[in-house]
Image (cartoon, rainbow, N blue to C red):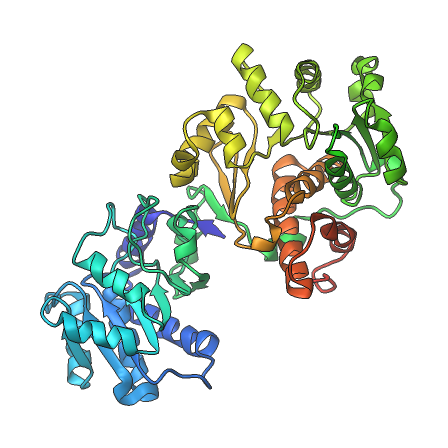
Length: 510
């Protein structure tokens, strides 16, 4: 599903009116009706209607949508619906003003926040539900008082909090420390907005629901929109079929460079994940000191001491179809040399963890240009070693750092986190909405690296392998958390095989 920023969404809205003759008032009506229908059916669940609902309305389109929702509430809530005008009364001829006039004629209580702050605060503190339609995505700076005071007061309310399109205060320029409405649910209109998934903004959005209101698909599916939200529905569409007559040697061979003193677990996690992700053969190359410790851990994965590969570097391409370099590998100088040789081999694969640290050191000495075939999978702290700057700058607007890095190295980059970003050298990007604290456990990233490397080694195209890996890892994390609660990284491993050998109807999470 395409992702859009505020300018792109505004253009879709404008072109819908100009090219397809949709009246703006009709679009607003559709948005309000569809959002209210969703809230009633899926959030309130009809049997649990609130006694009182307060609508916070601004003067723009979000405020107009909110006023349409206020009208829809009348039959269900009777006298329990109240409107607070956050920034005064809109122009009577504006879309918002037209809807306000209708609300007034229907007898809905309307309060001007600027004039009746005490009453507004009292209603906000005592209501069962707050619906936020104060500000939209067009905001380009931090919210200031008095609106900031209203939002902060709303955030302290015990009421259920729902935002229309985006939580007020969230926009493309959102930064850590900005004031924003803290929603439990965000009902975003037609397409997901990229601002919702900014790492600092995402915690304010709660559960994000995409509400289709009828924009023409020719406008919402444009190739010019380079962002895409990864959806579980795409997993089996992206997953290639495996011929029934294959054997281990034509399902790929993944060479894993992992395992140092105290980190043998990383080798086990990433190598087992790769072996369970359709690749036919997996060989781990580990430090000589830990090689004897790793051998008993594996039955289906081959183990070699690292020295074994040094003598066979010229044969790498003939032997291996994919590489996984770095989890728990260590950062000794000799490994910089090995990593450089592995990069120069041109074999596709994944560089993760200690491999990222080693790569950052190599980049200080020489220019690195991949062949668009080596995925880098850093977390934010590792990422700034490659692109410079501070973690906070990176998390404020990840694309501003990640896209230039991907272009510079000519290879895809995945930044892992509660929201994960995949960027390509062509400036395409994909966002995975994670928000699963159970996946924030030691070794989880090793499993992800192994899954992606397994797909790559088995012949899956590299960006497809990344998308599949991110989706599978996140979906299994949700499934196991729902089934068992908090879990360990190794708990993910047994489910990988079931997932990649199933189809949509028989997926383990159905």
